[in-house]
Amino acid sequence: MLTEPLAEAIAEAEKLVEAAPHIRSEQDLLEGYQYLAGGILATVHAAWATEKTHPGFIQGTGPYTKMGLDNPDTLYFGTRVDDDAEYVVTGTRGTTCDLSFQVLSGNYTDSNVPGSASAFDDRDIDIDADGNFEVRFGPAGGAWAENAAGRRNYFTLAPGASQLVVREVYSDWSQRRGTIRVERVDRRGVPFDPLTPEETAKRFARAGKALVSRVKTWLQFPEWFYLKLPVNTMTEPRLTPGGLATQFSSVGHYELADDQAMIITVPKSDAPYQGFQLGSMWYISLDYTGHQTSLNNTQAQADPDGMIRMVISERNPGVTNWIETVGHPRGILQFRWQRTSREFTPADGPTVEVVGIDEVAAKLPFHEQNKITPEDWTARIAERQAAVANRMLG
Image (cartoon, rainbow, N blue to C red; front, side, top):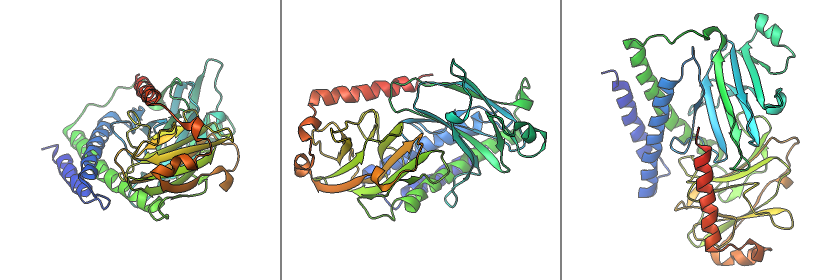
């Protein structure tokens, strides 16, 4: 059977999920199965929807295919590339806060973080008055590289380049997404090759291999970058591992009892994008549509002293900047600052304090201004639901 390698890989991935070391409850395991379902969807789609000869952007992670601590404020698009071919990326700039491009060499695995061969944002390209742009990528060495040298909107593919990733980042969920497409120059006007039994079998096998790698990889990342840190602390801002252009991050992990809360205090940044989120131990975002498990610089309430104070807890503290743990007593903490134009220092980063849930009001210096009514909270969640639905159209 052509699908046998995929079926065997799904069974292997299921065993990996069931054996995950962080599982403590039935909810943890059920979320693991949900995570597995998203992985199956994503890897099968990628195996059949992506062609090196006829590339097209696909959404690498989304609400139903989560991986890699997906940012609720970001749409992710990717395509496979060959380092000896020329590609043209055209599009229209939306009103989103940031649009960034990254060329990766290799793949994320449970033993490797791929190198970033090139990373930049739209400030490094020319965009016309109507928001239209054209960016070209081509091979190192030879006439193409000589022609591209020193020219804006021309970027050389380093040897080993294998993926082109585009991120569209929202600092306000009502911002308008742009458009983007990619073509391989030497395949314009050339139809797809017809399917063969060998190619069909190869695609099912590729999906299976990718699924097992995906589960192994993202189970390993929290061990590498989060869980060795002291619990209920966060790091100073640092350049994000993996080579993203102009992004700093602060990370940590939490463990809170039902009657505890974590108060995170951070300056409202001068960076165009500042975002915070919680993640589960599966290294994916918590439900950000029906719950406030993330806040960015537009959504968060800032106090008169210029600080943003967020309260992370299971029980509702009755404040606007409540970050809901939604039944997750353990999880990941993540700040991102993007489109930065300076080095970030410890003073730009967060401070953390764990208190009893009944102490929250006394610990917030502007508590009276921070309070929110149940009706206003319901309206706040309704806005999130509508914004996510609108953002996913098209």
